[in-house]
Length: 252
Image (tube, rainbow, N blue to C red; front, side):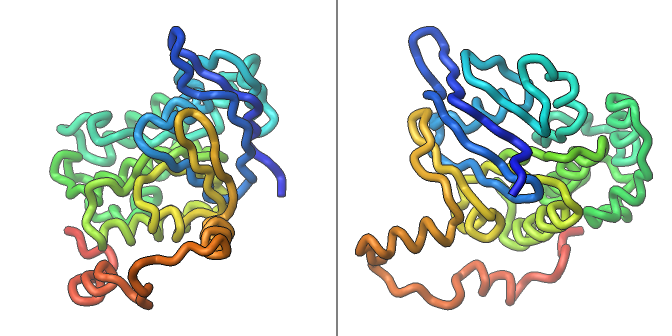
């Protein structure tokens, strides 16, 4: 597979503290790639450096053939970065916000078509502050697509959402990947990473301690003799919740 992001011996220091300790990895074109780890592991720092939002101390990063050291402006044009809800003007409606982003990106887009992609076409003239949590997250992801990026970065996109809203967002992320966009995601929900990601890198204390497909990591753990204390069932309580209460894009 063709790498679209290549990170080699990346380091980031804050004084004497080394937040990222010489990590090396690749993200393949068209995959959903997960960067996982506990708080303080260095995930956000790593992604912010790739996104051109934070300077690195050393190392080499290539994004779609562009060297971060010399082509940062070109990299900015081919990536989409998800804003948290606080990054939007709450009093503007969705059409006005899309128009604002188009101005920032110096591009044009069919706003209704974009909103239809995330099942928010009927909310086009609603103010952002009137949206539910799941709707705000779907709109936030939609704004990452305005400049038609090759790569989008999603930072814990389903935190705080109910199970149905989470599943709806999973479907959206998979649809985006199906259209050819590479997706890099951070999450603290391991079921989410297992469901969505072709591969994951697990970070701890500034280092990558494992990188592989979720299935391979799980198989290796089982092969080591690990046994769960409780028998795994073919469904879980979240499945029950959704089966009893959920409908596609139930949120109003």
